[in-house]
Image 1 (cartoon, rainbow, N blue to C red):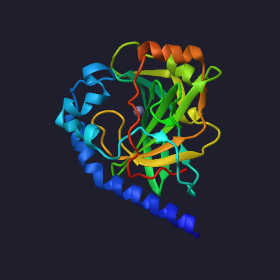
Image 2: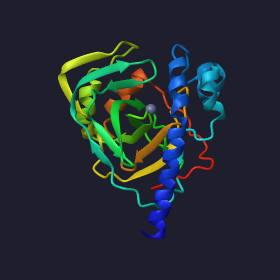
Image 3: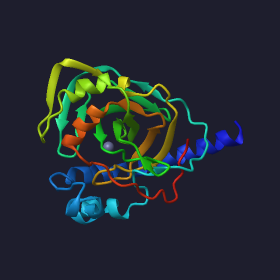
Image 4: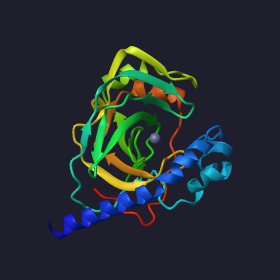
Amino acid sequence: MDRRQLLTKGLIASIGFAASSLIGCTLISASKEKGKAWGYIGDKGPDNWGNLSEDFYACQSGTSQSPVNLESAVDADLPELKISYQNAPLRIINNGHTIQVNYRPGSILTLDDEVYELLQFHFHNPSEHQVEGKALPMELHLVHKSKKGSLAVVGIFLKEGQENPTLQKIWSEIPMHKSNEKTISNININASDLLPKDKDYYRYFGSLTTPPCSETVNWIVLKQPVGISIQQLQKFAKVFPMNARPVQQIERRFLLE
Ligand SMILES: [Zn+2]
C-alpha cells in the first residue's frame, strides 16, 4: 500500500468514526422533530432553522453541515461504488418539502464493508451541492441506512437534456399538494435507472440538509449529471419552485474525489 492509499484509508476511517459516534443523537432529534414547521423562505427559511426549535440546534451551530460547494477536493483512491438496486412498485408522497419515492427493503449500497439499505429518494430544485460555486438545475438524493443506524446519501445532479423516461414514470404521478403516500402498483421503477453511466464521485462527511440537520451522513456525490427535459424541470418547479438549502462551510473537513 503506497502513501496515497494509506491516506485514503485513514480519511475514510475518520469519516466512519465521526458518523457512528453521532447516530444516537440523530434518532432522538428525528423523533422530536415531528410537527415543527420549517420551509425554504422567510421566517421559517434556512437562516432561521436553528431558531425554530432547540432540536434544530445543529442547523445553526454544527460544524459538519451540508450541502457544500464541491471544489478543492483531495485526490484519493476511492473504491468503485457497490450498488445493487431491485425493481419496486412506485410509492410516492408529497411531504410538503419535496417529492419522495419510498423504496421497499432489499436494495443496497455497500460502503466501507458496511451494508446500507435504500429507504427512499427525493428531489431538490435547484441542486443543493454546487460545483465550483455553481448550482445545477436539480439534485436527486438516494437515502440509505445501515443496520447500525448510520446514513449514506448518494447525490445525483440533474441537468437539462432529453426527457428522462424513468423520471417520466414518477412525474406522471406527482401529487401537486401535500398528501399521504400513494402506491401505484402497475408502475415499476428501478432506482439504478437514475444513475449516470460514469460513477466517479466526491465523498465527504456531513449532515441532513433539512432540519434537524443531524451530522450523521456519509455523502457520496456523483460527478456526472443525469439528463432531464425542460418540461420535466418545469413540472417539478410548479410544485416546488425552490427547495434547496444554501451551501455551508466545509470547515475542517476533507472532500475526497
Ligand atoms: Zn435531500
